[in-house]
Image (cartoon, rainbow, N blue to C red):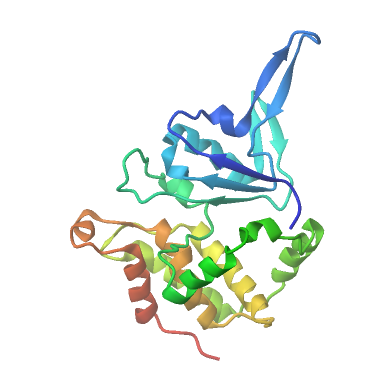
Length: 253
């Protein structure tokens, strides 16, 4: 998509200033100069986000929510379309720090990749026979086109029944017996936007209940914290979302 890309490798010894940037005193000009950190890009990949301490993780909060970074009292706006992609290690790995609820809530969705199937693994071998596929990647869309597409997606129609379906699903995550903390309103808004995007990808100008079902788990599960009793029974947030989808009446025309 063009634009400015930055990758940040999170480690336990990183500081927030390693992410946001720092003001350095210039001996010649006798003034402080701001040296921007890697977060001041348009697309940011944070690798192994849970390797860093919560203090460093919190450096992403303002950027992800307000699309700006404040350093030494000065605010620097981030250029659109600002987005953060992150990978994390399984929480049982040594040297990891769980992401706080406020951080998780700022991610629009979470995808668990898992292992590829046999056919996919064979394709991986074939695609890397001569060189890594990333070496042949070419730009296929401009930043301007991407921004225009984002605005166009906002025009996708959601019937009031679909809106009610989304809100009811989110509200029931808060009232479930196995849930300690349910999804916030950010979850409802994220599901709303993602359903619009999925409808556009399928060539529709309206959202269907199937869009909600397809995206609900990826959008809401990481925003749900199960209670102690549920953890003992190994009940996962994904299972709770699936249960609610089966319980809540699907809107009809």
